Length: 508
Image (cartoon, rainbow, N blue to C red; front, side, top):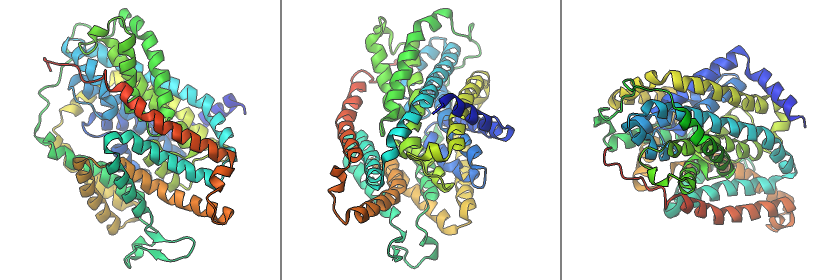
């Protein structure tokens, strides 16, 4: 396979004027979503997914992907200026980002985080370009047994990463699987749990559930924590600083940090269930242990900001490999992206890049362009995003509720789905409050029907024998990889935690 020729073909698709417009809109919206404290890419994708309904699939997925990795850029702005991570993947950026701002270096910190995000994202996309075709070729021998095992692997790795709350994660996943059984049984034609409602014959659509859990659920949780009462008086102003741009020493001292963070982040991102949060924490911990100035970490060390920033953006790129080549969403955000693929009649998997080359390579090529656009936007539009930070949350909240309701209703013009969305919002709030996992629920809702279909096909092929899972070489490989990940992921999780407890910030 000529990777360069495929990439050029994808680039020719991505650079059409309308697709470039969608890409820029997604990049800007993604940064805005990242700037809003308490939100993140999964919430932004879920809320804005209905907007893409009826759009050209390539342009729509380019916009959604730009929202996904653009939120990583925006989330760090609040981490630096407000000591409040925009979402979980930028928590580690507060450790040294906010002390840098308090030390009068907010401007250089903002520019360095943009450059680090660009490097991490670009390295990640280069590795996607090289490795995605290889993953696709290896997985072409997969059949129904392997698809079922892949779905199981995606769920198990996520549940392992939940850690001490794995029991609540299992319950969350079981709820998602239960919701996935609603509708008509494709094999028998019998209705399941429709309660006589004609609108439930086709099953429970993922969009109202995702919007409710991530959109309204996060909003209600923010209100519960009193975010609507807080002002922005703690924001660190940067416009009065003597030097806005980083020094030559900043660039020289962090050049290898960017390389290490990018590679580590990408590797962790490829592992289903690990994600950008673990990647950023591991990168911070690794850099701190390798640094000659480890005692300065937590006090305003530039490497302490650059390491997690390169890692979380590289991890976001890495997560696209299992999504595109195996059809495994490793996080809530990629689960929403998978649902978007399915909405347009596309099923990511081993044959996806071969059967839909314009779509797959157009998306990969757009990520190169998106990272360049985000670098420019995140540096030169900083004053705009700072103004967004200053908007009181109580003013943003009603707008979010309206967008959630209109977005849900616009998909199928269904009041039932709108009611489901509000109900999911209430459920999402209580899930967050008591430690359940909305991400596990959404993943199970998306993967459940796919796993059920694959399992039934497998049982038909094997005439009801489960021995088929140990008789096929690809199945044995997947089982081995799954068991390895179950053992490895808790170790990765613990690796980052001992040294990444938030350093003391007496001045914060």
